[in-house]
Image 1: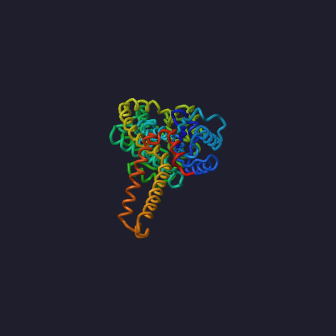
Image 2: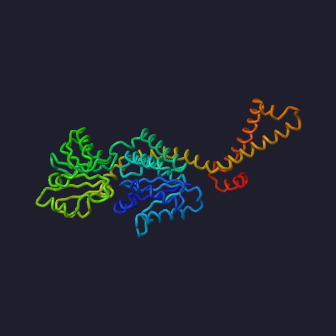
Image 3: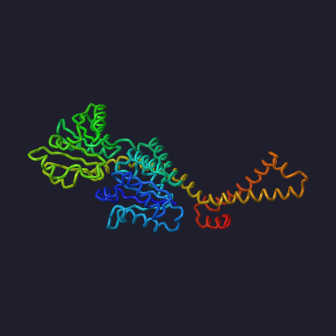
Length: 424
């Protein structure tokens, strides 16, 4: 059995999402905590600017799903020292079909702010690789993630779901393009993660060239700036640049704000031209009260929803097409997960049948043959005939069991089958 707890942009504001953002070190600590106190048997955590999602496996807790999820939510709240009720801001799912449906949609970009964006695929791969490396994954989660990536690749190849705007960074650049009336605006881009790189590339593609890049690792920013013919500056200089530029885009992994309102007031003192700040970071790099400063306009990821909705409408027909493909992949995966519930009984059945066939054969041989047992069972022909009898009998019985249990979907039938065939 698998479950999902999702705190995402659809149900939770940015103030809450940034509070529950988990870095890699925190993921390890939280995994160990859940393993010890709750008993999760598999875990994968995705934490981005738009979502923190916990995928978990708990085959030994079937029948207590609600209690199990409540325990995880409780531990998450305590882990982040959150005193209020978290449940109103969560999406909770259990069962392989429901959880895999969400994950498959996520991998295809259907759960993203901008439908079809590809960045979530890289984030999902990173989350999977991290969980795999630290031995967090259970067998169902492992296969589920791989199947979701396979689904996403197929849909992006066979639909136009990823054509057009593909990331929040693109929506940000579109916002700039529509808002700025200056002929040759000056830009400052702080940070050089994937989102920031995409923003800079989109700006460059729109023929903006007055772009300065600030990153904590100067050589990294120099190399990237050189590849596009732009300018790299020292990270310590970015505050001074806020007095000169028209647009500043922030996208770093800093857990603390990079500047305070009082600092920005001092920097902007006496400057009449407007400064547009776009903060794509979670946690936010720029405090919200900076929007109160005269001639400063502040936009964060939640303010980009209008652009997101526009893209959603453009891609509606592709969503329907993608969802039909997803159902096919879901059906295959659901059959696999349901059949896993029959696996213990099937293994036990085959073992019992094999033992019976061998025992009965030995008895018959002993009563009717003068040939020694050793000589007889060393015969390849005899062993092959014995295997055929065993395989024919066991396969026929397993096929009927699958039919009777609707391939593992009928829980009552599974219960009866387990009672009959599982060893005590």
